[in-house]
Length: 221
Image 1 (spheres, helix red, strand yellow):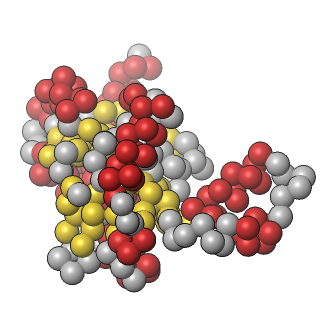
Image 2 (cartoon, rainbow, N blue to C red; image 1 turned 180 degrees about the horizontal axis):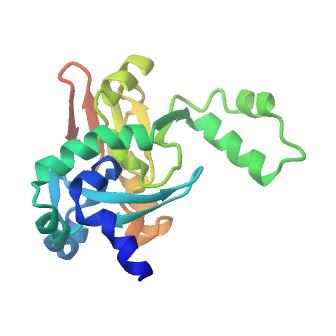
């Protein structure tokens, strides 16, 4: 009987609408999966949908929304998208940190006894302006690039158009446009990171993305 009560909330879209969130996956790498699930194209990526089942501090469980659910709920992909567009930034708020902050936090977890935040930040002060964009859980955080107004807010914060390096499905590296000379080198670096350091199922893309603050648009660079 337990299973029946577990399934009940998922039979009706109204009861799950507020739990629908989106994620980004690579279209080409997930061609088979995309035949079974509702999705929307976005650049060389696809927006896919999940239903949040439980959430604790930085951990949460989700169920992938399949075509079967769509039939059951009798809804369109657009309705799913509108729900996810509203929910995801609220349920999984974004965070933008400087690379220096991220590296210093990492050092703190690896070496808490000798850790000194001010010293660490000072040592990295010259490392150039690079930021990490993700959600607060740092899980499937690349979807933050879809959040309404977030690109404009970031470009205002750093006062620049910017490049996004999709380092994994979990986070994006952000570089102000002025700082990125020799972007071919960056593309090669991304390829190397993907091929050697990222689990195959966590690779988001081999493309660089560019946000033009004048046009307010993201494009593949």
